[in-house]
Amino acid sequence: MIRKDVYIDAPPEVVYAFLTEPAKMTTWIGTEVDLDPRPGGVFRIVPNLVDVIRGTFLEAVPYSKVSFTWGFEGDGHAMPAGSTVVEITLEPEGAGTRLRLTHRDLSGEMRDRHDTGWDHYLARVAIAAAGGAPGPDPFADPNHRHG
Image 1: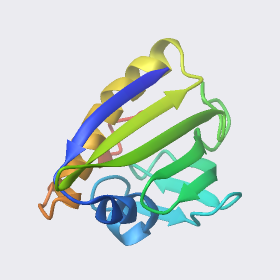
Image 2: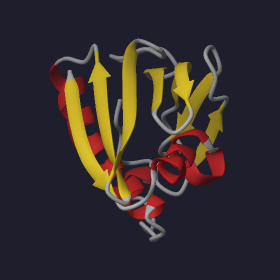
Image 3: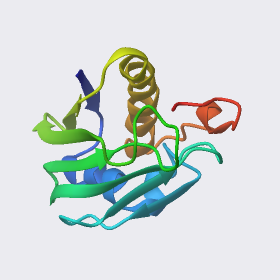
């Protein structure tokens, strides 16, 4: 299991939009995003033009929590589509938001890769949600594989 905690200089309503609206999500993760933020709705991210992350929303509570399954489409992945669970909670903290992420059901190399990946992406969402420009994502390079 991975646990991450990051402060974002933006209110929960703004941060939530970066977790549930495709146009905002692609500023920090993915070259293509398809989201239907309701229980049973699609969660799909193309992070690097090669891999496809796919799952299903389990929860989408405006401004406070999203959770979804997570894994990779296609045969031969150590972590098949929908095989792990990501939970993100948002709590007001001063003028900003405390984002807490838990990624369950990970082990070994997949855990290590996702630990690094979440550090990278949470730093990017913190910049984007606060109104900054995180710039081109080096992880979007198809030669940088996650799964």
